[in-house]
Each structure stands twice: as C-alpha cells, then as structure tokens.
Image (cartoon, rainbow, N blue to C red; front, side, top):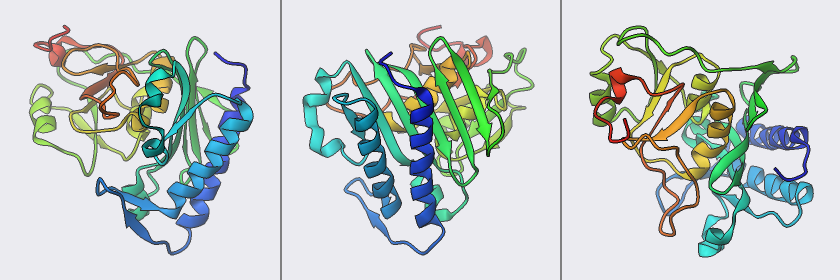
Length: 269
C-alpha cells in the first residue's frame, strides 16, 4: 500500500458526494454519452474533485475515471498501481432521484482492489475496506462499525439474493431457479455489493454488463469483509486492467464463499 491516510480518501469521497448532492437538489440536464449511458453535471463535478484530490494525496499515481478513460487509452496497461474511480455510480438512480447512487474510489495493485471507499451521499452512508485491515460502515456522523459477510445459508433455503431493478435478465431468472425460495433484495449501484459485505444479503449474481469502475471499490469492501467477488462461471477472483481491448467486466458472483447449491456445474467448482 502507498503512504496515504485512508481517512483522507474517505473525506475526499464524501466531499465529492457533497458536489453530487448540490446538483441532485435542483433541476439538472441529462446528456447521453456515446454508449447511450446518461451523463450529468454531477458526474463531471465529482470527477474533477476526485481527480484533483487524489493527485494531491498521492502525487504521480495515475487516476482512471469513468469520465477520463477515453483520454488515457492503452497507457493504462502499463500501470501496476493506480486509482480507479466512478465519480457517480448509478446515474440512472440519480436521475430517478431514488437515492441509490454512489461515489466509488478504489486503489488497484497488480490487478487487485486493495482499498476502496463507496459513499452514498443521498443516504449519508459510507463503506470502506482495506486488504488485511477489515471493512467498516458509517451512517451519518455515527462511529464507524465493522462489517462482515453473513454465514452461508444451508441448502437452497434462506438465501437473500440482490437483484437490480433495471437489470433482471433471463440469465438472472434462470440462476434463481436453483434458489426457488430466495428473498430478492432490490438495490441500485455498487450498494448491491455492499449489502453482501455487511451481511444484509447472501448473494449477488451479476449476469450482465458492468465496467471495472462500477465494481472495484465495492469489491475491496467485500473482500475486506471476508467475502469474494468471483468471475462466473469460472469462480476465479475478479481482476482489473488485464485486457487491452475492454474495461468491461465478465459476469460475476458476490458471495461469502461458493455454495454447492448454486455453484454446481460452474467451471471452477
């Protein structure tokens, strides 16, 4: 780990959240990026604040942000240590004004997220985790509380499965056939991974497209809380900045550990 105070990064993420909320509380325009995803001035305000702040905290350490990726091209493949940032994860939730959006900041070392902050400004909730140190959640100004994944349910009953409101694919529905009595927990943005990290859900199968900046910070929280984020169906750890052609993630599963009831037949089990 480089020399920086994690509290400085947490504070920076919260400051970026304040910038996002300044836009959230008033009318704002929604533009469309080349990939048809929405973009607001909140994304850009948060990006500028995070990029400048991280450069101050760790001079010379690259910052890869959703809003800067086009300008950085293939040079990212030379980086072994860098910040991976999503200035506003869940822009669709932001536009809907349901509060389930986050500011994500992750430190990547050799393809692995080793530190991450996920801040949900509208909910005033912050999660963070650091490899070998643990994971925490803070609500408002209360003291941070350590978090950990829940014990794995026995058999096919008792599972709490996180699903997206806007991403319930046929593959997701097919996966759920293995857990017919599962309770579905709906949540937006990277908060879905954090629900598993804090033991409020047992499983998050993401069988659709995401980008690396969507997941890295929350993966650091999950892993620091004792859980795993695994490519599916290989069940290998999800890794970052390994492919020159894309920053899209493969399908993945977030869990405490693989369970026979849903992992049977996966190629890594």
